[in-house]
Amino acid sequence: MINSLRGMNDMFYPDSALYEQFISVATKVASRYGYRFLQTPTLEQTSLFKRSVGESSDIVNKEMYQFTDKGSNDVCLRPEGTAGVVRAFIQHKLDRAGGVHRYFYHGSMFRYERPQKGRLREFHQFGIESFGIESAYEDATTILMLCDIFNELAIEYTLSINSIADENCMPAYKKMLIEFLELQNDKICEDCCKRKKLNPIRVLDCKNSNCQLIYKDAPKLLDHLCDSCNNEFEQLKSILDDNSIEYKIDTHLVRGLDYYNRTAFEFISGDIGAQNAIAGGGRYDKLCEHLGGRATPAVGAAIGLERVLELIKLGLEPTQSYYFGAMDSESIPMLIRAARIKRAVAPCNIEYRPRSLKAHLKNADKANASYCVIIGEDERKDAKLWIKNLQDNTQNRVDIDKF
RNA sequence: GUGAGAUUAGCUCAGUUGGUUAGAGCACUGGUUUGUGGUGCCGGGGGUCGCGGGUUCGAGUCCCGUAUCUCACCCCA
Image 1 (cartoon, rainbow, N blue to C red):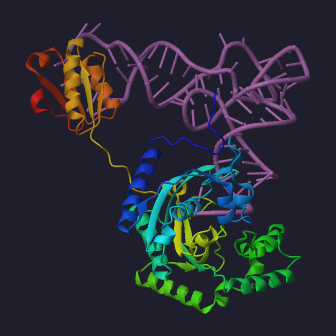
Image 2: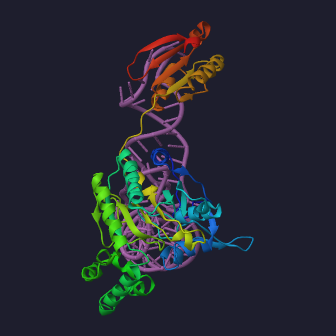
């Protein structure tokens, strides 16, 4: 027997129906916000992710499905969606076209991780990216849009926001933080020692409780923002307040991917285990330039679909369905014709073998049908159908032409 | 990459200190005497006990390895 690869799942009904439902709601909301669907390749050059996501991140360091293809290209399966969208944006010279461009995407992402609840090796994201607006208004609108999607699906969440500074204020802060860390050298955990060298601000979201105790006294990024970062963060908060969006400021919220600056946010669920981030995003004003395009401000977010599907509280709408059965083989052609008419409006289930009425009713019940449609000798002669409503037990005969 | 627990029928699980042809419930399937379903009754199919080694007269049960699943660390959506 051949099994699927570790951490790669088949999605059957009803999970698959929830997936479709999510995509359709998210697509509807995204288009109301001016976003258009963009499909980008699943496979990209490895260097794209090294340059965008960042070589200091675990994603690039040890989680990529990377290999050499038959043309000796160093390629990898995308571990996230933003890099590909930005690449496409630049490649098609939309960075030179000016104006505002908004895209949404959804599909498989791949990370070679140890599977656990809410974490798979092939997982799915719905993401949005907005290019061309450098404003807290666009950041806030991105957040509002995610709220709309979650609210429409009755998904509960809490929202955390933070500002992770920009190229003006980050270097000075980083220096302060490193100085602080040097003093704590012997107390912080092994991982944090590594982070100190690689990507110091990542120590802030260390899960080690001892480390967290120490970092309570660490210099806070929010206290050391430059004026423009600070103004923008204040503006973001007031826009969210104006729109009655509840949020908490999490000074230790840091994005895992190197390309983010300024606004960072995360939607958290308390209901899905340790992997509790259902969506995350923020500003990445320097990424276009960094990937060889014209400087273009941008903001984006991604939703983890597997994590979110568990939280959809709305039930699937029950649909009326029909069961068709014949009592003798001569009636079957007529049965097929009748089913063909009904298939235009409802799911139909046909039993091709002639059976007794009793057996058909039993089958219809098992198939969870709302109506049982039977053709026997009598019906065939009169060109009628015998129909029983299985819920209220009413039954009647109708002409096949009026069916 | 690290740790803990699991793996027996399609599903949920029993299976005694190693001992005859490995069980149950649900699901599936046929019948219940020929045009009225759900609950009843009778029958049937389905397991190389995750895989590979080892110990033993004998292994679902003990030992080793391995794969996968679950959860957590880590990481992140």
